[in-house]
Image (cartoon, rainbow, N blue to C red; front, side, top):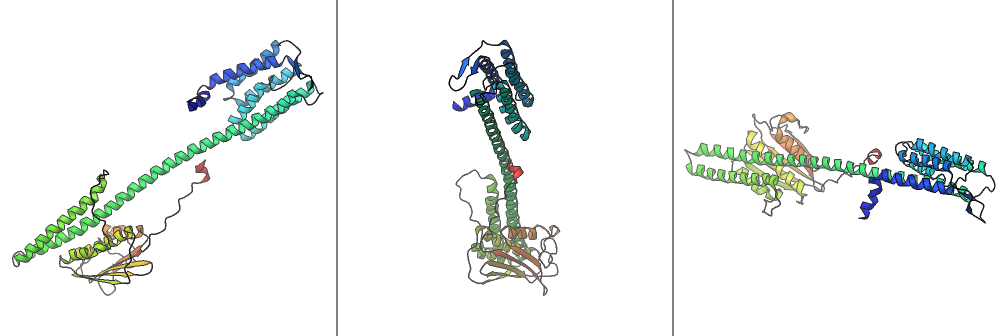
Length: 420
């Protein structure tokens, strides 16, 4: 209820202006009958109501109806009306020239020129004060002149307060709009990052399991006539590989349909599942060796998943592209980093990720999505990746991952222009 009443003057500004105009005209007409005879006697009625004062007051009050659109013109008109009232021999006070001070407040509040908004009301008050001195210099200090000075100060103070509040609300509105735009941009960025993350997961899952399934199916086809028992065993492993692929695909794609249910999810892969990963590759006939240097230390969840996926992708490339049937996985733990190396013996037909990366680790787009995905995963957790052929033959993928998560960047402070 209180909020509705506080908004009523703003919604009915024209009615408010009419009420103010009528009251000021009535006050000015009545005050023109009074004369100030000093502190002893005070204001007393010395004359009857003047039709001229009523006409000038009505003109000044009527001009206030346009004080929002033409504040400078209205201030000039109301000031001239006050001067004419004084020239006719009537006492100039805040009551007889109230319209001029309302116009001064309006100019200080709505004028686009800040200098004019501060100087024009002072000039108007000074003109009215000087006019009152010409009319009756003695005594200098009268109640009417004190009210003139006080009214000028109050009008300026209220105008400055109103302007400051309006600017503050405008700044709040602009800041809210900026926050809304920033929130929408951040939401779009997060959606893009999530899509990229899911695309990487799908690529790794599909590439890994399809490579294993292809190797197992090829081996089973080769052994089907000569060694049917081993071929049957390989087909059983193929069924397990495809089942695992379906489970991981369901868990990953299920993130896109998350409805907030409490259905159990598959655990996020990490180095704890590394033995199972190596076993799945060994079933395809790939000979693997694992070496760990240094005391194993836990990684952040992001770095742990990144390490697992990089090893998985590197071994998948070995299975698909390398001419060698052996590979070596090395984990080196230092005080700050985990260095992972996946090396194979290579072969004449080995091509990794669709291209030939440089030895310095520069990964370009024309080299396929496998190496690009590994590089992006490493960079996303604050690490770096190098991939290329070794001088003595073979291919090696080396990545360095921090054991501690990288520090977050402080949020950028909007420029001063954005704040206002």
